[in-house]
Image (cartoon, rainbow, N blue to C red; front, side):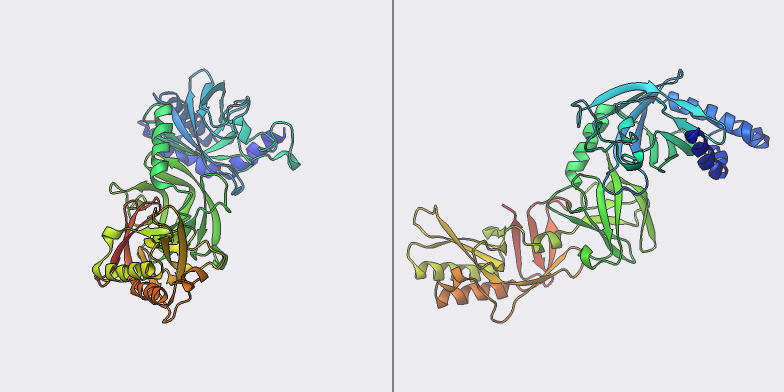
Length: 453
């Protein structure tokens, strides 16, 4: 009884939308618009049944949990409907039970299309792939622990149909307003999973924690830091690169697709809206449907976060940096004949007296098996997308290891640090994943290549 009341309330509220949704369908009978609302819903339901059952490869169900439950990502499920009320679901999500978590699983159950107060697609019997999202238990302690109010993951299994066309059906959950998009699958389900995983590997990294989101008017940021979500599929959408200073910081869920990713809801940056993002052929960025919004990794921030050392490739150094490095190498060897310069980079030293900036490594034995590390402080800021600015004080701080190498080493290290000062355009080999990146000064005179090795 309670479910019927809920269904009537929600669907009545949406009846204007639902009763006109069939206009997206391709009907040949124009007289349909002269029929009563009840008859139109009946005919629209018949058309939906036909569309659902005639898809050769079934449907991809882009499934989101309801009520803005930001700890849950979007899920790609798969569904194939037959004309006798049976539906086969498939998926490989992490909430599959009985030891099937993250394993490809298929399960058959029943469905029903209610046409009373508007179209409602009901999945009224248990399905191992779909039902865990609407089961009133803790998703982490399932199935033994029922959560308060029996809300579970705030998923739905009955959906009010909002819009219909031959290739797409948009629905919303009755109880928790979970958003669901059915899109006709254009390949086998396992191939879709494989292609989606391959795309994910092209655009997703645990190391690069944020992306620029830009149109011609505004730049915002998507942060996928692990403090937001321990699993893939949730961004923190911010108006400041450091979310702690942000005025706007909303959690938004998405699903990966074979061409990029799709957000649960339409998002806005500047004067532009975006929901579906696809990877450009040159792999430099994700763009939205009309090409007005671009998403690209904050490479500048990745380097500036200083969590690892980015080493400079000797062959990539411009002449000015190479000369400064050679002077430093000679000074280190002069301080101790067993010492030789091992390399330089940008990052954070790991000695007791840490310095973030220019990192200098040298071998302390002739066999080159033992290294020491010292650092010279640099100041860095992010001026805009695709650039990195480095500045250095006139007498930058150095750590204890370099301080103990003598005046010549100290001077050479500081000169090299000051030689790095400038604004650089960043040209990474992969714009969305960690990879070697070339930094070329805007003046074109100083350049170097960094590798995270």
